Image (cartoon, rainbow, N blue to C red; front, side, top):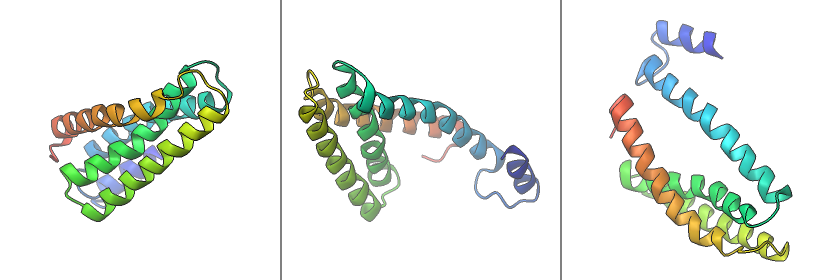
Length: 134
């Protein structure tokens, strides 16, 4: 993947931001991928209330992106779709956790929007500082 990014950047075909933008999203993927992998695994196979927190982490990303689309980019339609999907995902995960008799399953719907707000704030801070898009 890195050779493709370098070639497309050198050829002027990468798009807005060039290699700097590619680096930001590569780091985001390297950080977010394992975090979401852990969260998904933990929701299904973990034990205790950490399963509810992991469910909130999964929903956080969808809700946080919805906030980003709406508040930072002003893409109202996309924001509505992401926020609706995030609420539905939170409800489905919470129902799953309740049926699995996970202790404190209520943490999922409580933490998901709070973590989404933190996610949005971090995204705004990081993207503004690194690539100046906000």
